[in-house]
Image 1: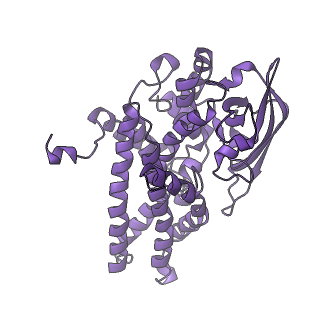
Image 2 (image 1 turned 135 degrees about the horizontal axis):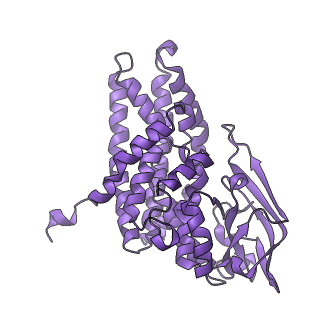
Image 3 (image 1 turned 90 degrees about the horizontal axis):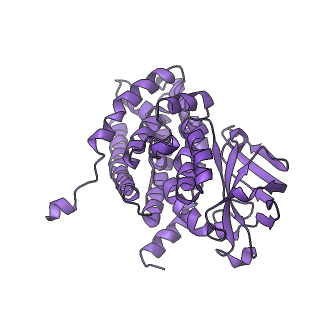
Length: 385
């Protein structure tokens, strides 16, 4: 292999790239009436109706086996879908978690009965999942989990609390990381993953309003919730290994690069007009694009690793850390540009979009693992600590 060959960028295969035009045309029609400040929520937005339509088109679970209702295609096909969803700001938060990680997790670790029950519902856009990882006082330290599923003659009794659980109030199911043996001081030992039907007695879901006025974050309480024996995913006590593999799906995708992209595209359209064009704006556009391009290339390369069955945990952490840094830089830099101009020259819709992204952006470096946690993972992966 030549040096040039070894440095070649990973490219999305032509058969997967061919999806882009069809998906883009569908979305342009489906969300034509949504203003930019609403579209800016994108994968944080919610539309069960849109999710069902995407499911009917075969665009949910596109990587999952056909025998379970999926599309049987590669991770690159889903990557194209996700890029298009984010680029136009489609409100796809309803099925996002189920498609990105819950169904793949069930496929990898679940029983045959679990696969046949849950995965077809996900692919049809009918079963929505949330993630039960974070807990009060724990932050990104998942190993300190205190929520406990105690085995009994009927399965497990669940007690505890989860927090920052996105869209839990809209979801039917949660995949929760819980302690099935030992104590919190045991760290990685004794952790398991269970599927929780959030309609069960003893489950309470409370939305939390954030700075932007959104109410997608939730806290979830479990008070003697009786789970069946089929609630357990994978082997009891192997939850830590399972959840770290799951986080590679969560940290490496375009959503860690494109959370501010609707704002950036709207600002870029303004900068291309005679009243918006300045040398400073042109330099800023170049700065963003020269960071975005290599980050996207890194993200696509991780998809190739996932296609090969690898678990690129450190690489995914690196993309997430660098990507969210860029996502947070974009609204701050655009605000500096716009507020240096005459107020009457700036479109109101652009300012409304900037307002939302500015208020939401502090969460970008929290969700999926805080900056300090990710940097620690990267340092260990590089042998620096």
